[in-house]
Length: 213
Image (cartoon, rainbow, N blue to C red; front, top):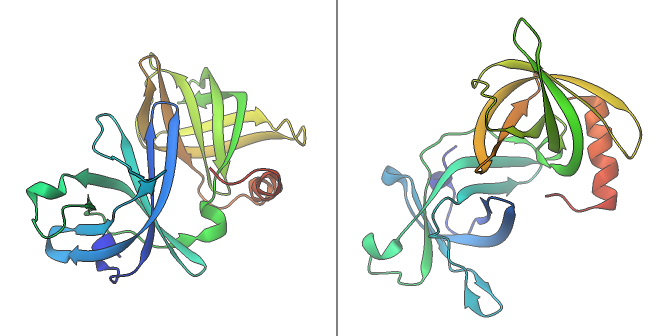
């Protein structure tokens, strides 16, 4: 399912991240250009001012809630609408070409963790100190120094202790993405081969205490 395949009127959430700042806003689709993978959405206002997305070094993700399922588009690009159409001078133009499958809603939500841990990789079990930034039922994000380079697709083991329950986790997972966090560190997104029941319980517990990030 592509983002541009959704009907006009579909509500979407735009998540934007730049360095340590993270913002989420809800809007709705008002027009689509399926052949170009383009969605035009209603303008977003914050304190009666337009939210501007055309900022350098900002990453965008769009999610669509469809009942018990969630569609996640991680390659969203915000374009200058004035260069595409004169019909909408005040709107958001999003291009997203990926065709994604729905994921279970409860497995998608992430909660902030922010604990120290270790990451082991490779045959020689190369170890690195990391911070486990956030977790979900089937994934986690870790921050480590930019000097350490791990390729996408590498199998790793992330170990950490949850401060809330004092439970120790040794998570076997695969690096699926890498984004720069700041000039000195990167964030590795790691995916588990299947949903972890113990991680799911921790996420549910933390969701009751804090909202999803």
